[in-house]
Each structure stands twice: as structure tokens, then as C-alpha cells.
Length: 91
Image 1 (cartoon, one colour):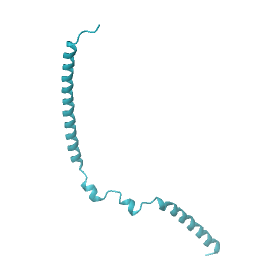
Image 2 (image 1 turned 45 degrees about the horizontal axis):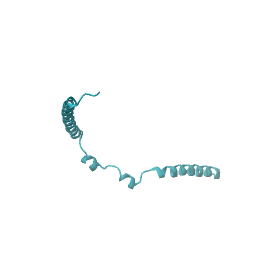
Image 3 (image 1 turned 180 degrees about the horizontal axis):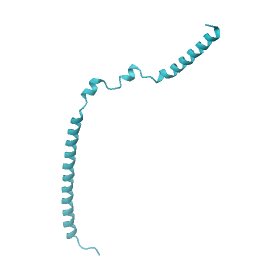
Image 4 (image 1 turned 30 degrees about the horizontal axis):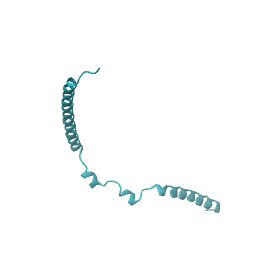
């Protein structure tokens, strides 16, 4: 290999190494990867069916609370109507 060819190979190698050095800081380290879930972590999560069941229970509870609130508002409206009938008319 001639000197000019060798210089060209070295320049090419230097350019490629510079590119690698720029990429290296962006790669995840072992410590970074520890922040991600492992297979065991994923197995411990709820299944789709379990989530659907939980959502169904939450929905039923929300409906029950809504119905209770409606009943209480009806009672308040009734009492308010009774009270307003007892008040003297406004001038």
C-alpha cells in the first residue's frame, strides 16, 4: 500500500471513529437499562382480562354513586320547594 492510500485509509478510519464517538454518548448504559421493566416485572402486571374486570367494577361503582347523588339532589329539590312555599311572597 502506498503512503497516499494509507493516508486515505487513516482519514476514513478517523472519520468513522469520530462518528462512533458522537453516537456513543446517546447509547443506553447498563444503569439506564435497569429503569426498564424486566420479563418478571411484566408478568406481575395485570392481564387484559383483569383490567377489564377492574374497569367494570369501577364503572358499576360510579353508576351507583351517580344514582345516590341524583336521589340526594331530588331530596334537596323537594325540601327547597317546601321551604320556598312557606316563605312570604316577594314584593
